Length: 163
Image 1: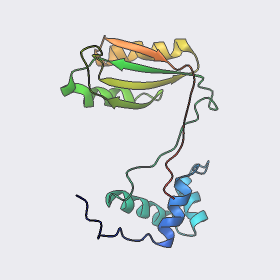
Image 2: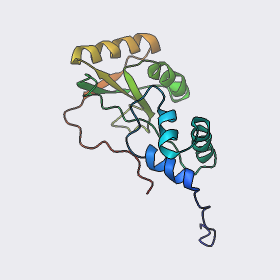
Image 3: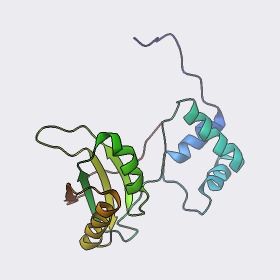
Image 4: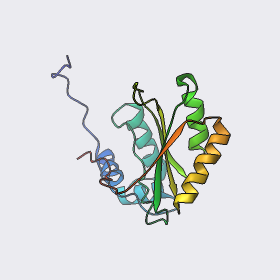
């Protein structure tokens, strides 16, 4: 049972300022951490160290950019569900995520009626481009059992809100 008498350490003003910025849309910049630092009134190194420290302490799990793939010209998404050996999943995921068209990859539990355990989200400018990436991933990984699910509608895409 969690100890409710222990209070989480308070955030500093700089931590609160940086977290407010990174929970929203990140600055569109070649150096987004410099832009974050400028908005927060600290140096770029301070911003980077602050975020690393919050992550290392477990106070945040992660943060990242949300790709608005449609705005970037990638109008098609395909979730490729693969049947992979569990012992090889990490290595195979590394091969898949090395592709710029793959935004994320997940390992999930299988079920008797659903044997797929490795999922890669592929973005492309056409349906054919997504399918070409799937074929190239088959060749690169040696996996052959794959089901490709194309997105019909995006229902939700939001960033983490800390406060």
